[in-house]
Length: 297
Image 1 (cartoon, one colour):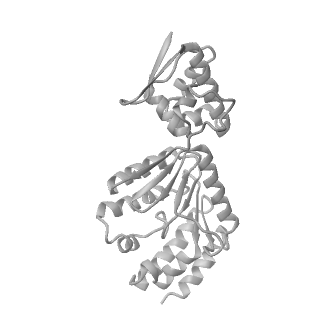
Image 2 (cartoon, rainbow, N blue to C red):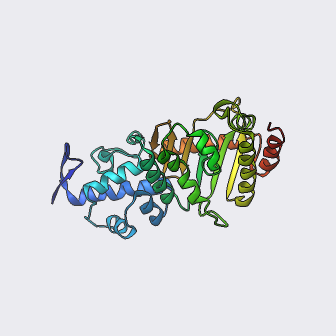
Image 3 (cartoon, helix red, strand yellow):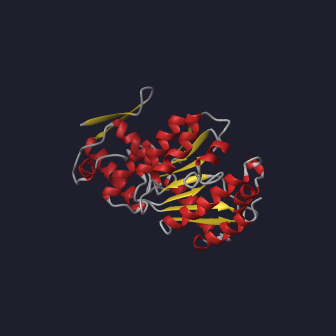
């Protein structure tokens, strides 16, 4: 049996080979991806968005079944590999040199951002979410601060910024997903003093925000942990790691979404460095924020 894989409407690949050989290459390379990520079949099927039973059939020994073209493309994107490599159009001894770093820039409106971020959070349930915010963490930010920070934006944009945080902290005694936040001390100091982007924000609102932050951090510890680092010692752009599935780097009106396994690992290692460099560990956050409270004027 000869096979032809349609990649998209504009481009197709003709691969004149026996379907059994193609299926064997596909199984071998899928097994390499699963081993590289350290997942079981259930975790891997979830990460690539296909049913576990279907994945088992594709990987069964001597099976000649292959996913549909759109499923193959989805697997390639989710795993950060080229479709050519996945289907054996590139011959190689392993993954080195064949992985195509997969990124996409998403320009999202308020409603689109809300839907997409909610989807990423749902997919990451059971994994650890690691987060470097650009201002006050969404998950801890009170409504008055949101209205001030995003006053130049439409209401639906502000809703998108806060919706997933409200869902994640919706009164449950424990979060379903571990969350770690690293934030520079300069962000909290500027906020407490009403400087920078918070210039003009009433002291009573800043006081309310920090008091709320102490309460939430205490309530959800240790499932939710925040670390403070010095931006003069180590720098970070804002980003979120959704377990091993993806990283989303925030660029203002767009997200740079990284699906490549190697790049996700590199960003995870960067987050590890932020934690190691923390000047205030998660178990001493309360006293640090309390000191800021006492100096609000």
